[in-house]
Image (cartoon, rainbow, N blue to C red; front, side, top):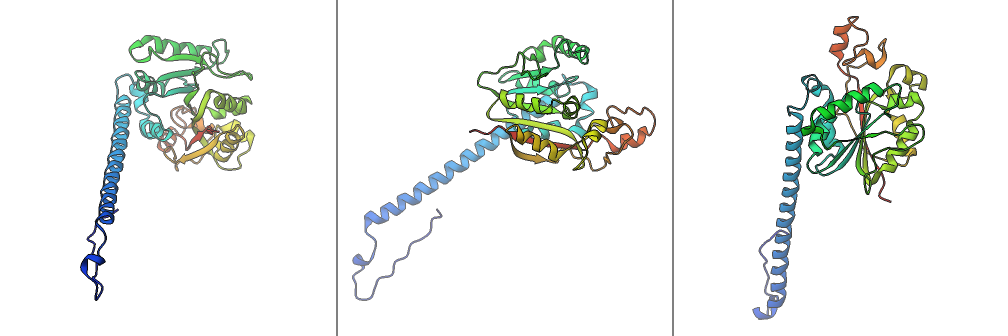
Amino acid sequence: MPTSLLFFRRPAGHAFGASVLSSTVLAAMLALIASSTTFAARAQAESQAAMDAKDATGAQLAAVIAGPQRSAANRARDPARHPGETLRFFGLTPGQTVIEIAPGGGWYTEILAPYLRESGKFYAAYEPADSTQDAASRQRFAKKLEASPETYGRTALGTMPSAGRGFIGIAPKGGADMVLTFRNIHNWIEAGDFDDMLRAFYAVLKPGGVLGVEEHRAPAGTSLARIIANGYVPEDFVIARARAAGFELAARSEINANPRDTKDHPNGVWSLPPTLRGGDVDRKKFEAIGESDRMTLRFVKPLR
């Protein structure tokens, strides 16, 4: 409440003492002004504290992204993948319990594991150890964790849902704060278990927990056959399936958009970096395009 001077006019024929506010009323008004000023100062201080905490969180994340635990090849992908902006958009903060789904070679693991090491809990959910498709990849990932205990010593390696079953070795008490998946959905669509995955993610999250999604983006209306063939998925398809599993769409971001990507390449999304499946054929063209155009979505498990 802004402070201002108070003026009182003395009515004609009345003594001054009878026309002014009583000392009790005036004191109450002054107390109200002081209270409002104190409230505004407190609100400003709380807002500044929140901003300072956010800045500190951002600085901590930036320091991890710039850290020596990350390979040079992975850091080279930062301009295309925007890890800091992406993780802040998802709402990552210290102290959270986070599950990364199908981490592959560990591109995001190199950031998430050390960031959450001291005050959070990080799970890497991989394909089953007996998977004929990814057994060797899981072994390489496990060796990566074992080789650097100072970075990954507190990372829990569990098994992601498959064949209608839930997570194995990943059951956070009270539920996880966040489940993150980067460029995996097209594989689950091809395998026919995308809906099963979403239901498992919903079950492992606490109420209010976040599902963070990054995925190659197809034009609306792209057929299922085309999705499987070229690896691009329509954004509205992902949103519809997530909602069917119980999630609410909280926000979309264009952090990882790439308008140069025409999405009509001979080897689908794998024509582009970093895969460059076509080898030297049109390599400079695909390198100039860069990585794929991607949706970045934040879903929330409702509190109810």
